[in-house]
Length: 275
Length: 303
Image 1 (cartoon, helix red, strand yellow):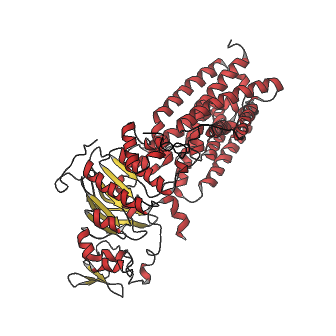
Image 2 (tube, helix red, strand yellow):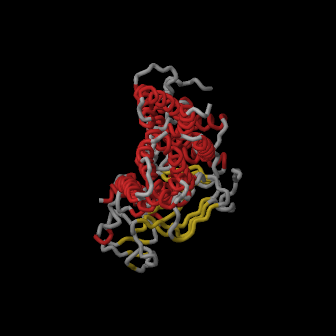
């Protein structure tokens, strides 16, 4: 069954979507969309360095993403420029340096489009092992860090005062983001990773009554988008990465349509229900 | 966790002890030279004008901010319940009151219900936090802090936005918690009734500890009466304990009759905001509203 490229693509894509769901929720809650974008864009620099220095691609992308996020924290402390501007600078300059480096390396031929927009159909068995293995590590870490992460999203001060070490949670969260970017790169590509993080989470918001449910729904909606997008890509012969993002967008738009719901928790309607 | 049993405040180990603590940010001291001790069963209230460093001091106590000088000692394994002055939640996160109650730790349904009942919002248990009114939200935050049975409650203006009847009830609750659980409480409050009737110690802050004392001495003071006559400027009522008087030219007349340029010549830092002096060399400290060590809000209001 794994011999079929399409089955491999499905497995890989679903694995990435399940992993990125909960992380995507934090990206949305903490308004880190641009931050995620910046880390993702730095992945191309990671790719170039891996080719130049003959390093493992995954390790190289992961390291560059971590370094860029640390650099950002450092620059932010100086307060000379707004976080927004710093993100813009880092995001585009790492992307540009990556592209320039690749152009210099005339001796290597790389498929830039595959890195930028994903090449899910070229997924190998090894990739699938990596995605599911790495994904499980990420999800286990998210579960472990869940309370401090949610608490510090609500209030950094409360989390700190009540002993949840939000600083540590935030740092580990960035490592997880870097890991997800490294393993998701092949599936949707550098340019579209943030979309896979954000759109399913934003779609899940509508249906979720708690942070936990939102995280689970985001994973499931992401997986659905992958399946839908891949079948669409097969059917219409469109590029797989963008097709997945378009499918996610369709789900998001559907979620905006007015639906009558019975379990709205408004408090007012629930008055006096509990003893 | 430390056990919360009734204890004699005067003899028990302090929960928190600040010695000469201060916070230095953006080339100035937000607060400096703070000495305070909170023990079990004790309510310590911080008062002072805007920008006096009340919230900063609360953050020193909770460990949100580290002291840039002096020392801060907390009892080992100190369990804190914190109601911050400001809290903005990104409403993309779905959060019910029930979930908020379990924000930083596990909590049994019984304790959860009891805390919500105590703060008067048992009917809102399944309400989304973003749909709460300001007063209801404060009640939920207070309930959350209480429910975890802390050794030390740090309440930074806990009843802001709560209606008048509710305010009295919540202050009664705060007093009662101290008796039933024996926890220590650090309270920042503008409510003079609470300060007078429910507090063991009042510390008046204005960049440094201006004065301290029991509420009884405060309530007897002329300054206190003056405030209720509407003439005082808030801070004046607490000058009961002042060992110094500010002269019109900015110098300070001390209790022993000596006159110096500052209240505390040793630290060279002086932040009084009394109504009766407004000379220029203090202006860089006065009139600013931004000393809450609230870094996010710092830049916008500086100009």
